[in-house]
Image (cartoon, rainbow, N blue to C red; front, side):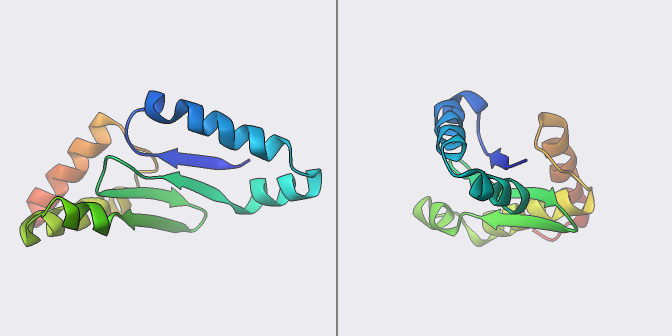
Length: 113
């Protein structure tokens, strides 16, 4: 099954996700199966980084352009990087308020920023 990960609120990307599903549903079955088995989609917006666990790997996506555009300090950039590493260490596979706070707490405990 194709997994679609996104940052921000689901309502912000709901229509886009429906469009992805519509396109996928209209592909030849053999292509649908391959995409469902081997692909993941990440919609990144309104965030600096995103962390997600997948088969035997944990992907960390960092939105460098957004960080530079918003002129984040080195300290702020390092916090974001550490925050995404914390999600990996804590074995988070999805985002919710509790996981975000837990990651922030670990970054503060590490005291590297």
